[in-house]
Image (cartoon, rainbow, N blue to C red; front, side, top):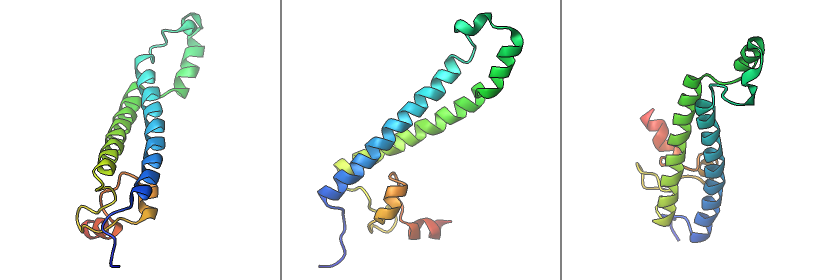
Length: 125
């Protein structure tokens, strides 16, 4: 029958579920980082606590800069996942953009937004 040049609709649906799950988690994480940036000033009910307590709690929270970097990274990840969903709709998902061959299911399960097969990725390295 030769080599498959795309995943079946059923396989695409399976990947879609994996991506949707990761997307939900990524968006939750992104919101958490954004909240830690916007509410990092301690403008909550803890305002009246003694300074030493604030300092103690401050060590346990992310700095705004760290949270900002994590939020940016998370946003990029979300965009990659959304682009993968578009490829599923176009039925081009899982096809290596270098070789035109199918990316292995194992790789796609690990990195659902991958656009390169392992071979192509390694040869670029």
